[in-house]
Length: 162
Image (cartoon, rainbow, N blue to C red; front, side, top):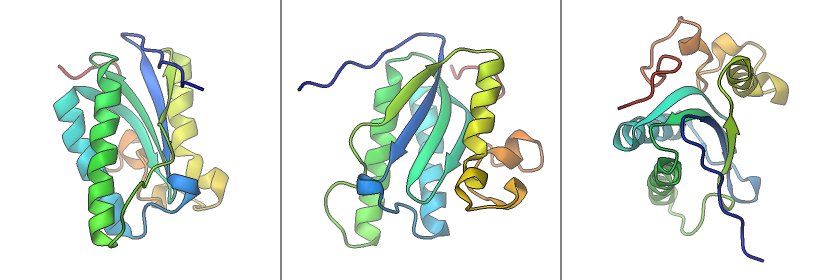
């Protein structure tokens, strides 16, 4: 059965979710988390993507993004996924797929739901029991979005890269 086309809406934000193949762990140490964020930082400049929230869990990733052009989302995610897979496979002497199929992309209307989506993404470590306090979870945008940390990955709300 052919897969359906993605829904692209210009001037919308997107909740992106991607998961390790068969829910496998994709971040084995701090260096892996840091490398993924480094790749995202480079890709957001290349594809003019604004990032409003993120959370890296051991076996999956959440991003809240706004593209300058909705069709850049697939190129952005392909670049990030391919770059991290090459790094991961070389570091751990692996071959083949790292990610479980296509990433999920859900259009998010701006306004109150955008903020609720960011909170949902950043609360993932609490819901899963990985963290008891978001201030101590290093791999989400919670601290940066709440002004206690500056990783320079997040963009101001509503200011799409150009």
